[in-house]
Length: 243
Image (tube, rainbow, N blue to C red; front, top):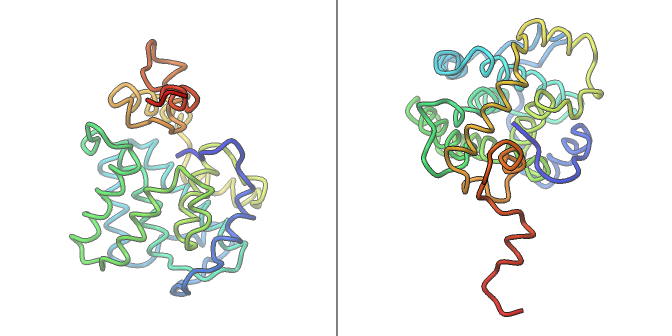
């Protein structure tokens, strides 16, 4: 949901870097068409199953977020001219916030890892190869750390970029206004900001130490009295060494 790091470089520029030094990926079976009415989900059974699964387990607000994340990710990626696998990008974006769904929340892991584990299991049970499922795992596990995700293959970078556009507007100015308006009309935000912050606070209350050195900890310190997670400065100074 969020980018980490004090500075976030424009999403379009980083996506241009993401394809360098990685193995070629499959060309999309169906080119994305403009305007965004062409941003249909990939015409595969697995993509349809993923969408219906997320719709079933998520709130309407969270479902809208992941669908917008896919569409914004495609729009960002199409600007670069890179080749990519539409099914991998779609299932990565659609499943990327499963760790915020009550039934999948663990007692100790960050929500990205909870979601990545659930997504990988869901995909493997439906016949996706181990190698492809691992790409999706990486996309979900890394989606809050945009500067790392952006150095990975395009599908991984685009999941982080698309989610970032929808969460914070990072890179929104790189997209056509009409395209953005159509995405928002198709999947309205439905109070996403309030639900997103509430989810962050809930995660920090449930398992605060999972968010050590994580951007969620900033929210925890603001809203939760006595939040026990140290800052990086506090952690360094508390190291058990004499100097």
